[in-house]
Image 1 (spheres, rainbow, N blue to C red):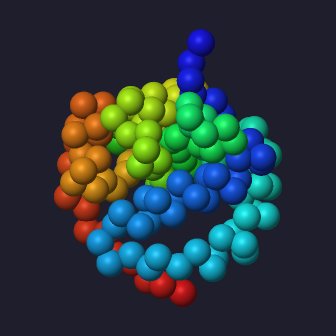
Image 2: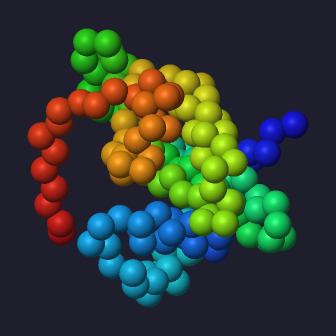
Length: 156
């Protein structure tokens, strides 16, 4: 039996807590949690869509009932097809976090395995993510390769 399960709307508060753990670990991040209240209803709604383009996989915390030990979340996106991806289906991993008291137990790896299977089942030909230096060994071991990408961003 796997420790990993698909997150449900009841997990939304804990999913936000672990997302904040990830955000807080990034250089120059904003530690504010004011956005959690506004984000919660949308997250609950998205977690209730089993066939949607968003999925989160979690592991329950072994020592703290009701808490989560690990989170991995991602989306499926459509982009116009191209060589090696004519269907244009791309997976994007955007939240990987482990509770500080539950690290080094393989939870993030197990959650990533489930998310990668979810991407495969939905026809994703590639999966993209950005990685911290600390998380890089995990992604390297899963076969992710660095890609020079001239990513630009505009905040609206």
